[in-house]
Image 1 (cartoon, rainbow, N blue to C red):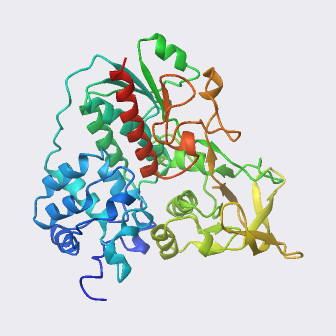
Image 2: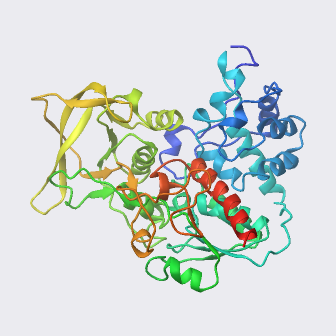
Image 3: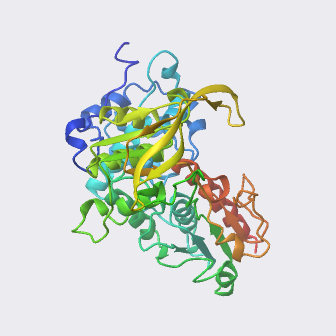
Length: 462
């Protein structure tokens, strides 16, 4: 490849070093690297990359500013439509969105849009974050339920439009999946806190330890004077396989495993008082980004061997290629075309093995991926003492069950208009994983942005 078609690689921690710490793996671009990468952008007259961005970042414009050395101007340009650029630059799957549509990708490697977004966000943070101007107060009050990416985006946009916004968060720290689900080595919590503080600087109030559906209901919020409610409650209800032995000690859901490790800082025990029992041989069942996060945490928590058990082949894995490569570099073992059928336990009720079947791929199923089919007589046992189930999540029904008239899908997702987020209840909007089921941070942000625009129009018509 020529220099124009080959992107600038981002420095990373050495795999042998990083598996012994929770520090960020990717180290970021230097100014020279950022300007070199930005110079690859050919500034298309009709840029297709913007179409791939759920929050409509003006990508060529901010990259041009990076090339010119105006990093703060570039950050300001990104923040015109994206309140969380440091987060998106780290965890957004650009390779299947904006970068996938980059013209340079047709004959070489696309511009590293995500890495440049991360660079400008970090540069601004290091040199002082500017607060944008907000519209004059409208006197309208909005309640946002959940402080994950959908809620933060919706709240930030509404605050900039002049509305009085309060976020209600069930956990003791704001950030949602950003704070409890994504490990420190991929998304440092200081970054999340910084982005949350930016949203607060816009005038957004955040109340933690408030469970909507228990502490208060949606109807209570309307009774308190809020004129619209946005539900960005995520999808935090874990799924299991319903196989024998799942109730044994040493079997975790990925939610518990990651929440204890990330939000409750079990990896710093006893400095922080939340322990986590990580065995010597840990099996993580699943093939998505959450599975990669869980298995890489296991290595850092002291596992001698950490493995992925996945019923399809690598080609069908939903995990980002970058995370898959990082896991391989760190020594994670992969048991592909392998499906657990039983968790084995010892006489004290602890995990001592995972019985599995080998699989082969048949015809595609409703997801479009080839369906795994068991191979008769292929049973074998993996010698493990910890099992983490990373099989996806669904929305917790606590809000929908306490909100009369709120329609939901059979699987629990809130039914909301795709363009506006409007639900079956007047004045109630929803977006993100609470509507779609577990998806990406940037798609949740896109939903929050659409809902904010619709809520603003609704409030100003009252």
